[in-house]
Picture (cartoon, rainbow, N blue to C red):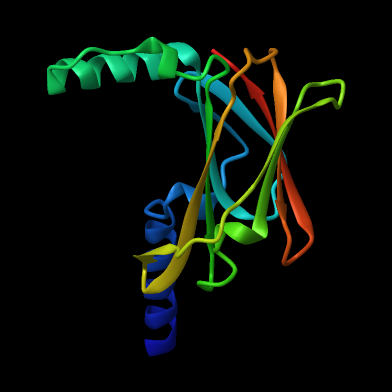
Length: 169
C-alpha cells in the first residue's frame, strides 16, 4: 500500500511539474516570435531562436529613445532584422559560442549570411536542480530578407545541425 501511495505521489508531482518547464527544455516546433512564425524542421539541440523584423527593432528603438530622451537613428537598425540564438548545453564548454555556427539561406539554398560564434564565457540558469549553461549569438541581417527563409544552427562538437523555417510578420 505504501509503495502505491509513493508511486502515485511521484507520478502526480512529475505530471504537474512538466507544465513548469521552460521553453528551451520543452522545445516547441512551431511558434510565434515577435510576430514571425518559426517552424523547426530538425531540432536535436536545446536552443531558442527568435527573429525581430525591421519594424519590431525600429519600434523598440523609438521606445528606448523616448525613455532615454534621446533622438532615435533608424539608420542603425538592420534592414533585414535580427536573428537571436540562445544555445543551452549541459557543460560550460559545450555552451561556448565558439563551437556554434549560424547559417541563413533563402529557400533556393543560396547563403545569405554565415556567422561563427566568438569565444565567450557562458552564463547559467538552474532549473529544477539542473544547471544549464547558455550563450547568445546575434545575427544582424543588413539586407532585406526574403519571405520565408531558413536558419541552420551547426554544433561543431556533436556535428549536428538544427534547421528552422522563418516566415516574417
